[in-house]
View 1 (tube, one colour):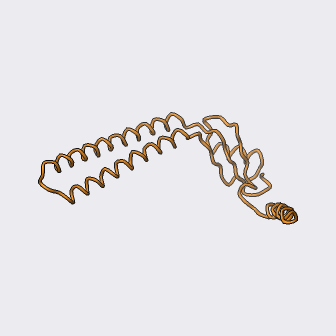
View 2 (view 1 turned 180 degrees about the vertical axis):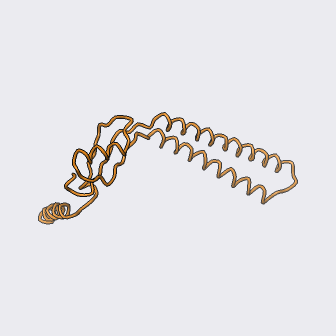
View 3 (view 1 turned 135 degrees about the horizontal axis):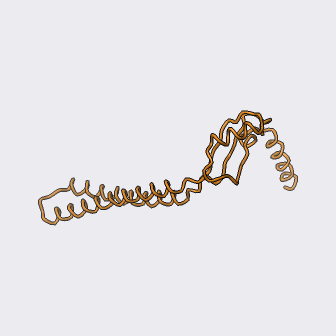
Length: 147
């Protein structure tokens, strides 16, 4: 088994050396000004290296936004289940007072959940608008020479 482990390790190095990926031509810049634009970075690195930049991608700290999307998803799932219960109640409609009362309650719950989704959307919009700061950038060159 030891010979197999040694062979796999050697083969992995050879394959990695012979495989071309975007990361072979990409720089990761970890310290950039908050208001950096992709176009500015592309221009800067083209002037610095004299080589064409294929792409610039900015990374944002959007964990709060992702958390808000998850909360919105939970609320949307609750609303979906409520709408399905309303459809079920309408399908099994009867003129009984108890049935109408249950249907009105479900419709109020659906409306409350709809408003809750809208509030979540507004909260997410405010969070995104106030926190669009780049934390890292990835600059990809067209050729290995630029890298």
